[in-house]
Image (cartoon, rainbow, N blue to C red; front, side, top):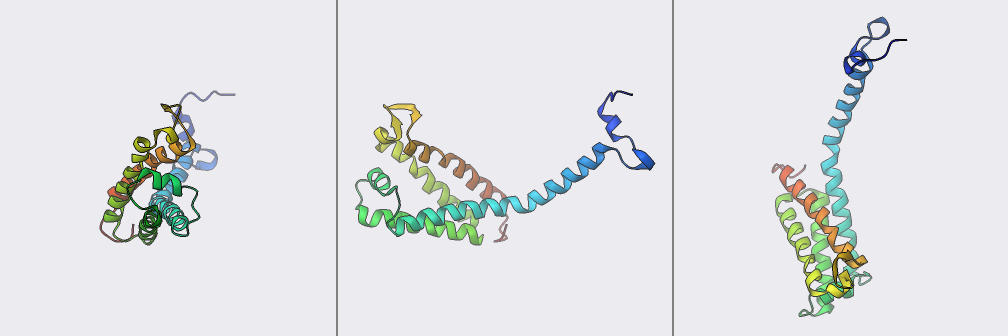
Length: 167
């Protein structure tokens, strides 16, 4: 039995002149990458849009578990209208992302909104950090820090948007 000595052995023709394993694997990979390029950005928009629409609707319906957290982050505003207003803003962002319209503007609003959530780390350190240790997050702190991923995703959507209103 012969040992395979290099990657090129996989590329050698197999039985009856068929291509070797490596070219077939690369062809499957190329098709998968092509499909992913077509669907990944719309799926990212739909996923983030759905989260924003859902979380916003919970705030507007006054059934969100984070109403106190939001209100206490911005204590100088009346919570009676603040939480629903934040929810309505999130609904607008989510709806626009799902629709794929005005994505440059929507992504700017999304990033601005999410950047604002970091204010809670300053305004409520006793709620966002365990024992005041900024490396030890509470559930609320994790809720805020995960927004770094949403910010990065918003920037990806904005960078890939080519003024076609549907990406």
